[in-house]
Image (cartoon, rainbow, N blue to C red; front, side):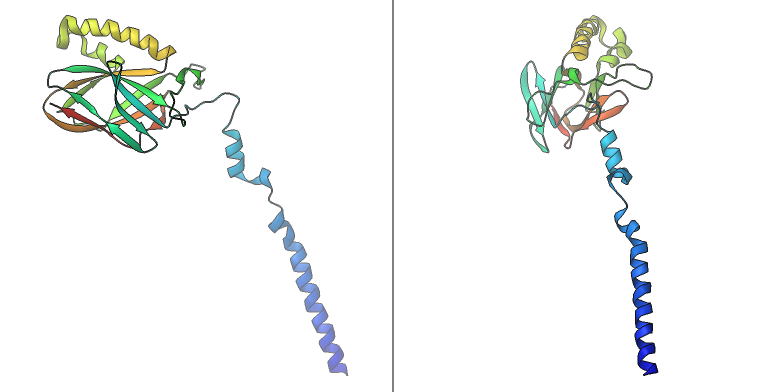
Length: 208
């Protein structure tokens, strides 16, 4: 009889210990709410009243107002073609997630000093023996010593395009063919000192 009572009492004590342990652990299982989750907090803080990144999912390239290349969400068609010794002006028009023209001028963002962050192009990865790329800020670097009065005329035109760059949605660059061959260009949409968009595919270029 004593043994039977002792067994029941011992079983009861073990059950009490297990129950106390479960109750003590409950705050650790259920105490972490959404406010304690750093991932949720980071996500919430990323969104302000004004967008700081351009909503871009692709772009088209135009030469002489004609579309020559299109890239959208990992698919592309067309390409750039230029003759040796020729320079063409290429306009980049960025596309939103509906494959419509993205309104870059509506994106408001300022840097840590309170200055407006402007959009620009990042063009890399090409063979510099086959092509040369001229951005607006490069034209002043080349000056008249390379291209003479013709370059000066392009420089004035570039200033006009720079005005459109600030107030419109197209970004231009010059593409010059140096020697026959093929290469590719990696494109980024830069916003201040960071890229808002990086193309998934490189742009094919042929120099004839």
